[in-house]
Each structure stands twice: as C-alpha cells, then as structure tokens.
Image 1 (cartoon, one colour):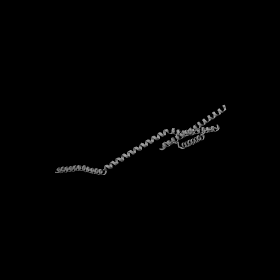
Image 2 (image 1 turned 45 degrees about the horizontal axis):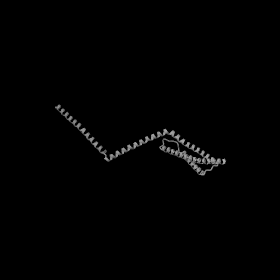
Image 3 (image 1 turned 120 degrees about the vertical axis):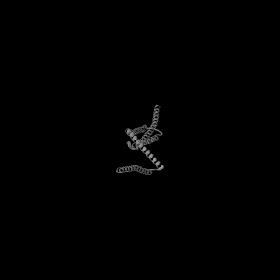
Image 4 (image 1 turned 45 degrees about the vertical axis):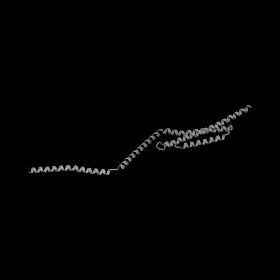
Length: 211
C-alpha cells in the first residue's frame, strides 16, 4: 500500500515539474514578444522622417569630405610654399635692388645727356617737350619702385593670404619694369633728337670752315 502511495506521489511530482517546465518558456517568450513589440513601436519612424535622416547623414559625410579635402589642399600648398620660400624670397629682394639699380643708371645717363646739350649749346625745337616727358617718366618709375619697396617680401607659408601677397608683389615688379622701360624710351628719344642736332651743328661748322 505504501509502495503504491509513493509511486502515485512520484507521478504527481513528475507531472507538476513537467507542467512548470512547459509554462516557463512560454511565459518568457510572451514577455520577450511584449518587449519587442514595445521597442519596435517606440523606434518606428515615418518614411519621410527616415528619408530626412538619410539626407542629413549624406550631407554630413559630404561636409566632412570637403573639410578633409580642404585640409589636404592647405597642407600641400604650405609644403609647396615652404619648398620655394628661399628662392622666392631671394627673387623678390633682387627685384627691388635691380629696379633701383636700373633707375640710378638711367638717371645718370639722363643727367649726362642734358649736360651735353647745355655744354654744346645745341638747339632742339622740341627739347622742352622731350625733357618734360623724360621727367614725368622718371617720376613714374620712382613711384613704382617705391611702391615695390614698400611691399612686405617676407613669405609666411602658414598664412592663407601668402598667395595674394606674392601676386601683389609680382604685379608691382611688372609695374616697375614697365615704368623703367618707358623712362628709358624717353631718354632714347631725347638722345636721338640731340644727336641729330649735334650732327647738324657739326656739319654747319665744317661747311663754314671750308668756305
């Protein structure tokens, strides 16, 4: 009798354990499903919102790419500038000294020409006009050279405006060269006129002596 009771009790315990084992996963699954449904519901977006999110992400990537490109370009520019800095600085300094040197030479020639004209007591009809043009050309050349000298020749490769500074200097160099060419041309015109007068005077003197 006791054996039968123990057997019945064992069967009842086994059934209870089996029932609990089946119920627990189902309950856990129900809980997981409930949590998943809640999360999905809270994270859901409208198509237009999701599309806008994609656009913003794409815009952010594009902006980052531009910034990276600009940084790379700036680094390359600075590297190239540094490599050329010594030669560029030397050329700029030489440009100023050469312009001043040429101006001094032209001034000396111009002074000799006028002295020759006065000493030889020559007569050129448009002498005053020719010297006035030479004086104006000399003044213009000096102004251009002064402007060139006033520009900063220090090449700062870390500055983003260094390119503009170099361009401004190169423009000033061209201006000074052009003005010096104009000054030289005015002196040549004066010399040509005086040379003709000198030859004419010499011929006249020779003819008078022969007579």
